[in-house]
Length: 355
Image (cartoon, rainbow, N blue to C red; front, side, top):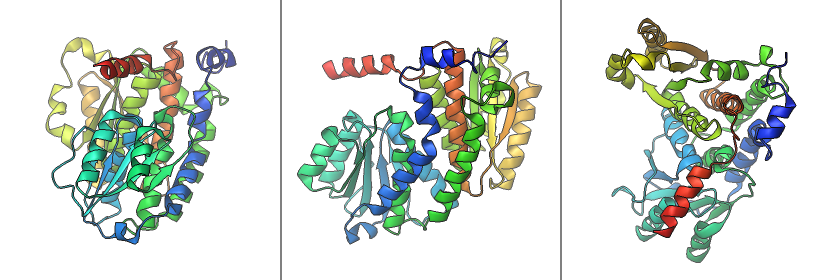
């Protein structure tokens, strides 16, 4: 009997907007966004800054978190902060580069923080498809990377992340990542081919993991550059599978969450932990992944380690994201939900807009 994850009728019934195509197309999107960021015309003065702040929420904000974590491995000299709220930190001033990212251009938190950045005299850049943010940038003469995207903000990760890499390289604030981006997209294509919808479940690691997560509460754990990747997995499972999920990071969780693995007892049978690991991870954190997985299993919690491939830290992060996106999609099909729509988020936005 054919698996429902292999039957075209399953995807046809639940995915009329073809989110699966946007997930599969992430490598090409990364390449386009990287090139657009590198090609953006920016004043030379934007290279002379003391810090970088990335503004953004949800799918538009994940790029900042990924950049912040990657910068540690790249030994970037500038501090990078992410702002996922209405207010800027007090240290953002005229010596700051502020990048405001909003797919729609109408995200109220990002617009509020962007206005504060302008008032502070910061050197600002906008990433958006249009909306109020584009209007504000045009009125103030702020450089804007305007891109076309007919899909969900969460499926535009290339634009929210790879464009930041391009801008940072363009300004000399990041090392030249040309080779890393090329290697990452090549590896993503190789990974994606084995995870695509037409790859049968018996040979498809993403479908198999979705099956293990079905009717469970996924807990995704990462460390270093994979910590925001674990968070990305959580949010993709929330939105694509319409399911609860938890994200945590090492080594911090070994100093608190570790103690609570066993209780409450009913949670044991509901949890399934996936610990992400790659070969460039700090050696002690690699050991912690192994030990933490064993401790979870000893406490009666189902847990496994997912080794992430890739020739660089950037490739490993992007490949792990690509894998997680496929997993969240297949879990949505198993949950018999439409992966693309997020009606509860839209209704909340409408309610807040009316207040």
